[in-house]
Length: 153
Ligand SMILES: [Zn+2]
Image (cartoon, rainbow, N blue to C red; front, side):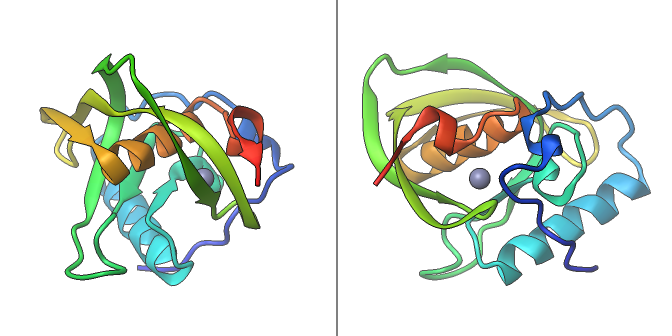
């Protein structure tokens, strides 16, 4: 495992729509392990592949580790299939925009389908900070940054 260099706002890879993961192979395992190590070292609660310069649809999230036990989750080729019409505004930071905080409106809950490291299809419902993190990281896969979708505070 290795910490990979972060890409920052202004890097074109962060503005690209990332293509899907097609090979569930050793390269993917290495990428995901490196992404976790990079996220924990940063330190952050989520990291998308474009943030380490890899334009592919994969992100990692751990909303719990800063306060308690680590709960690492990996989402490959994620897609929102349902979400609340109610939006909740909250403060978000981004490892690619250091030392700045933005107010961003996100759905209160969402239902997601995604694939795991073996390519198996999964489905789940997320709310609260997990829903916020998932939306934030999913935006990265679509080339969207919180300085575009949110308001600097
Ligand atoms: Zn971010």
